[in-house]
Image (cartoon, rainbow, N blue to C red):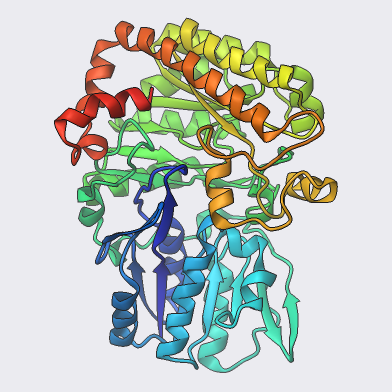
Length: 498
């Protein structure tokens, strides 16, 4: 039996985030167990046969669908797994599934990933879908392959949704208790050098793009933020790889792929501070020279000066924290985030003292917020940027499917009845189009706030770049971002992104 795992093309819009290619660690982790059952191949459409196809205001990135069909015909898989990491790209996953069924109607199509975990009824309600793997997919997909291979029943498999006799069934998920049981991702099923050469590889994702890898050392988050989808995919129960496992993974990537830059993509990397201290001590004790950052952010409440010093010593190049709001009551009563703004200020001071690059994420536009509350958040973001060089990342909140925020907005009529993929792709960017309106604010109010914030941020940015000329020069010559841009257009691009 043969299984093909597909990372579909992606569509981006003018007012959404820019496209980035990345090593599909989720698929590679699934493949690491699946290949114990059958032959496995990975088709990453964002790297292999890559092309750009413009259509109106959107651009489709990745292997053309005609070529995807050819690759499926060539490989002749018995089972196809399709990853669905973003609800904004679901239609492309379904289109790939249609192609699979066209080539071989008898081959089961299995969707997996965050979006399929939340909207399994949607995916299985579409003609191409046979199964959805919910949450962590390593064991569920491997067990499904074993059942299909042997012809035995799959109805008992944890974390599996399926159709039978016209009805939809969904088995409860069972979090993997011991993550160290899992083998390392199957990096040998891809060609890492193809990723490292891509002009889109982690573009704008990090300061350290070149020859870098993402790594997830823990899963689950016990926190209770109203807008977060993590609970729906990885659960609230926090589980983590041991320090020895993490170190061995790092060393493996250094030895086999000459990678010394890592992005820790955990949802709550330092929830267990003792474990994380042990990870850092293991890196220091072995003299492993790496650089790393935290693009998804870390829990600011668990940071202290000693930990920050150790992070800097072990190669942390940029730390991201999620402050979310400049109003303590909004944090507590609306967002349900247990964070002290006063402590966040101390962290900003410590990072400035240590010369550790710091980015802070902020979110505005929640039901229950007023325009005054949002201005407080903007003022805090600009103040920390000017005083402590904390790079601000401000965005409108997006009501993603399955979250408590989505249910609240749908119940109160704060969002449109029908949401398109473009709506959601653009909604959470500060330069995009907000979706949520309440009796306290309109879309026009948010547009006005945005314009004022962008103008103020540019003024602060000019001062920042004047204080940090080498950083400014680095942005200008950074190949992944500006490498294909005519020289005359670079100043305008730089100013736009201040």
